[in-house]
Image (cartoon, rainbow, N blue to C red):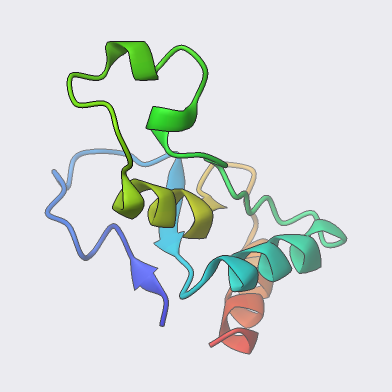
Length: 103
């Protein structure tokens, strides 16, 4: 199922998040969710399309170059929800309904 990356990690409660991260159960579900929400303009994003080790300019800075299967999995499944001040109650309701339809 979906993994809530905020409540599954210990975050400083004073931190204000700009986006709320979730992990989709699999990449195909994330892609379908992102496609479906576009017409509603809800602001969900796939955020990182690649693991850091595959982004141009980053690999030369890594102390342990190589494959990072967990990072690849997270990059392929990460969905972020908007938390900015322009998100309305209606947006929140629509996002909730959309996520429930994929559960």
